[in-house]
Every structure is written in structure tokens, then in C-alpha cells.
Amino acid sequence: MRRYGKHTDEDDIRQRPNRKGTRPRTTIRPKHEDAVEGMVLTVDRGRLTVLVDDRAVTAMKARELGRKAAVVGDRVSLVGDLSGEKDTLARIVRIGERSSVLRRTADDDDPYERVVVANADQLAIVTALADPEPRPRLIDRCLVAAYDGGLTPLLVLTKSDLAPPDDLLDMYGALGVPYVVTTRDEFVDGVAAERVHEHLKGRTTAFVGHSGVGKTTLVNALVPPERRRTTGVVNAVTGRGRHTTTSALALPLNDKEGGWVIDTPGVRSFGLHHVDPSRVILAFPDLVPGTENCPRACSHDEQDCALDAWVAEGHADPARLFSLRRLLATRERREGD
Image 1 (cartoon, one colour):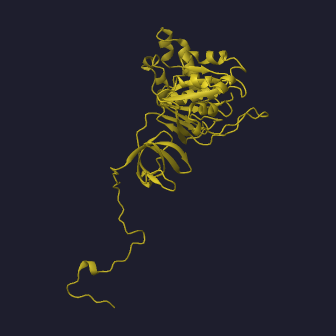
Image 2 (cartoon, helix red, strand yellow):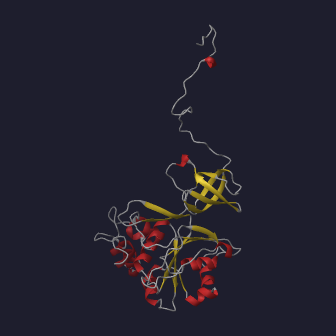
Image 3 (tube, one colour):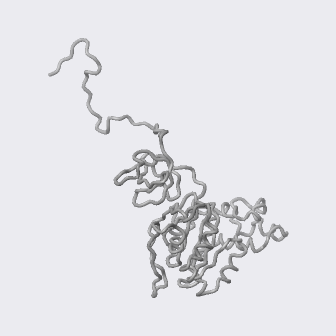
């Protein structure tokens, strides 16, 4: 049995170890002044590929970030091994403020929103005019998500050699959405990519569309050959495409002018549970002044909406109000309706 003398030092006293850990808990987070900036290129089962300078670094999210998740397009700060060599791992310690977000829910009844892409300038909505048939309700929903998230929409219509684009273009004419119309032959000889490329220079553009419309084929024509992704074909029985893109991926444009394209998995539904009508109308600056006398929490599609009188007085084009309400109403309609 150990005996202590009269003048024992405090360090000589034996202490029982804390079974829950020897470190005291603290709410103080490390500052990581030495963290390096990067951009998230893709996310795969908890591992993120981040572009740091000119190299791809594998990273994981730091525990201190809690439930906050990084998505493709995010600007993040990293510490740890940033060499990008095999079997190395860095740690994401900060996620920068986002300039825009493309969000969706699995369905309109699903309250859990998913951020698909961050910091994109533009949303390219790719749809085929035939094989498979166009789905205007899905286009409407993508437009609403773009306006809600702060992205500028671009409509890309493919396979115009199989069906004319006139009806679809008339439907969106009042919205003033820029568009590109292409044929299957133009996909092969590169003309389609050249036309679309004119809208992408110096910008970050997310591509969305349901499977089989040629989205990934178009992306492949826009990026360097070594970055190209696998493509599929349309099922002859169901008329639907097969998912060949399973995760979002940011790729640099094949030019010296800068710019990025973000290929996203093919979608079959685009829930809008998260959408706030007051954000969507900001994409209609000619109608915004007419909302000053709207009742509180106005949906802009009800009897007391002040926009009706505003437009009737000649302040804005009635076709613009009709288009706004059609987009807002798509939240209450199924995509096949």
C-alpha cells in the first residue's frame, strides 16, 4: 500500500480515469486558419472529391459540422492531407455561403428537401421532343425550382428531327426562357454541343432531365474526352431511359474560357414541397410591383390577389401572369396530369 508523506505534490495523487473520455467537453470549435479552399466535384457514400488548385482530393466532412452536408458545387475549406495521392484523406471543416441552390423533394408530400447542386448560375433543362415524349409538367417543376433557387433557366430541346418544337416553345414563350433546339444528327457531328456551349461560357451550369433525353451525351460532348461518362439507350418497350448517371458530377468545359457543367442523375419526379411562392415571383420583375397590395401570405393564385387588377390596368402582359400561375399551380398537380 502506497503511503504519502507530509509534503505530497498534487501530481503524485492517483486519479481514476474518466470512462466517458479524459477530455473535458467544450463548445469551442477549432478555427483552422490554415484551411485551404476547394470546390466539391462529386459525393459518393460519404466521401467527397474536392478540387484543390489543380488536383482532386478525397475528403470527408468533419464531425463538428454536424448535420450540415456539402454538395456538388460547394466551396469548402479543408485540412489534412491535400496531396490527392491514393489512400489519403482530407477533412472538410467549413462550407462556404451559397449563392444559389437547386433543391427538390422526393414528392410533393415529402417535407425533407435535398440540395442537388450549389452555386450554379444556370439550370439547363434537357428534354426530348420524342422518344421519350416530352413532359411539360416536369419542365414546369424544374423552372419553378430554378426560379426558387436563384438559377437562370435554359431550355434544351433534343431530337427535333422526330417532332417539331413549335408547341412546346409557344408554351414557354411568355417566360422569355432562352432555348436551343437540336437534332440527333447534330449530336453526332458536334453542332448541338457548339450551340449549347454558347450559353455556358464562363458559367456553372447544372443539367437536369429525365432519362433517355440525351443529357449525358450532350455533357460528354462539352467536356474533355477523359472526363466523359457512360451513356445508355431508351427502352423500346417502356419508352423510358435507363439511369446511367447515378451521382452528380462537376466537369470543366472543354475550352479556355472557363465554365463548368454539372451532370445530375436522370429524374422521374421533382417534388416542390419546399417552394415559397414569394421567391418564385422574384423571377418576374415586371409583376413584383403589383404584389404590394396583395393580402398577407398571398399565393398569387387566389381571388383577392392584387395582380389581377394590376395586369388589367395595363402594367404587365396578361400572358406573363398566366405563365406565373401555371408554374405555381404545378405544385398541386402530379407530373403526369
